[in-house]
Image (cartoon, rainbow, N blue to C red; front, side, top):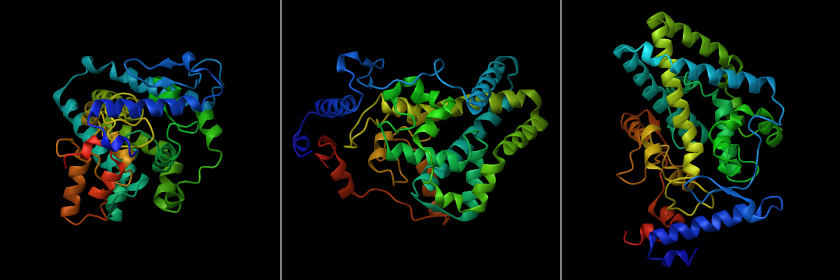
Length: 336
């Protein structure tokens, strides 16, 4: 770390840090020689572990249900050209932005998973419900998986590390409940949510809320709205979130010493309301602000700032300059 602090070449610094991470990841595999590993396309990230995505493993009932659900959502999206209307497009876009920003990135992620800020309780529950209607599982499940990701990042127990392969980290892990059961026999990292009646109720009745939402959509706009809000909007929302788990641990820049593969990826940040500044997030997971530079667009942070200004968000956490310096790889803070 001290040696890195004196480097004057940002690219060289980033490359040397990345290589040190790769050596560490290679060393934890089960005796496989380094030359047997396969690199993920256009990256230095190696697949050091293997998990069968489709064949040669047990498919549980939950896995089949999940696969059918994702297949149905993607098939719905294929009807988009045949059902296009500007009203449906704008409805899908507005719901995607509202639910994605307030539901997933602010409440599921920054409020519930990391306690980066506090919202008025009524607002927390309302925003969390937006997350429920984003089809990304209930808050207890989502937060538990995310906390395990940070606790075991890039290790054998990481729920979705790209060291198992791009597609496994992107969405393959969702169809492999055996993997989750195998790694986490008792999921006790969300006791704070389990103690709240609201979140337990949502967990028990999750599917009913999705059916109710679909019914409302159909009543408002028929099959066209189903296609655009659930199909097109659902596919876009899913893959925007999935890219944070996959692409942001493979492609991008690493400017903080996080001891993992997390990357800042600007194009993922644009479609995920700031979540693409993933190296920033892994360096300061307690921070409510993910885009730490003025030019790093972070829509979630802009909403948090507004809520703070009107008194609906409190205890908003951001890293201090001293904390940034301690995590800096060297060149990033050389001239500040």
